[in-house]
Image 1 (cartoon, rainbow, N blue to C red):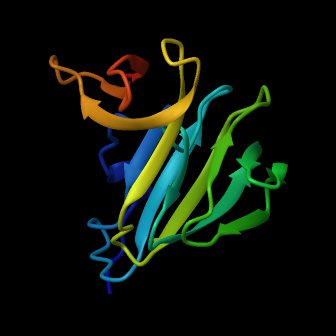
Image 2 (image 1 turned 135 degrees about the vertical axis):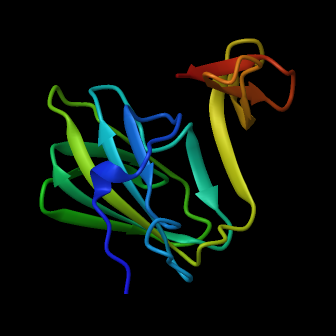
Image 3 (image 1 turned 90 degrees about the vertical axis):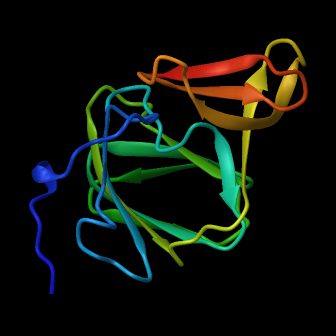
Length: 155
């Protein structure tokens, strides 16, 4: 058995105001677990994405999240849960004015190949992207795979 206090786990640079990776802290072997706090405009992910082998479950505790999906936008509020199967594209964003608090579970832990799509101004469309750490180490950058343009910076 492992027990932790979420606030004792160090956060990491991410697309959200707060992301605390809980998986290692609780010695989870078969599931990935992350705690998120999203300010208005924040997202759970760096772009519209999918995981080849991993299903994701979002448990919204406070606030409201709008998920962009292949079937259209879906709102998920406090006390609601949404699941995405492996290979399903989605991106959850706090489009409201109140903060969002959520737990996100992914199983299995290893997501397999993940694909992230973001708008590229140079290409004029949504393109596949990579995520890299900025040279100063204080941010993460998304970059278009087609032309190399920086499409986002997250601090």
